[in-house]
Length: 191
Image (cartoon, rainbow, N blue to C red; front, side, top):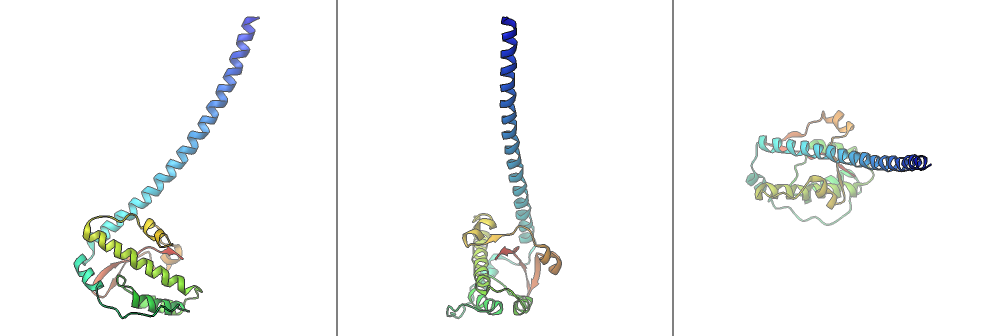
């Protein structure tokens, strides 16, 4: 009789052990999935940083020349909310010091159906601020952190990848000629 009770007790505890092991397995698999996702995000960020290093090391400009060009005095603009994307671009062009605006940007702005021109202005101002921090980091050798974090501080989400629409329109080019220098073009931000 004791033998039968022992077998029953072992079966019962083995069932509990199997349940406990199954629960532990589920927890470990969830943790593994989270870790793999974090690893994938870090790999994408690493590739972006590598691309920035390559772009910075191969561009035909120096930090002092950029800072000199950026220090051009601009006439103060009265704070007026733009009612079109083209007006937002003109206002941003007058207010920002770290951005180069291509004619194609104005052409696109004039035909843009986007109905939130103030948001466009805010995005360009945020890009200008992030560019200023980027230039400071180049000059000082001290990072201000990932672009995602910097743009988040200004209320925008930084996209690590170029959208399919932009890739189709611009062919995925991240560097485009502007006057005599090569200019790094940031990936899009989410408006």
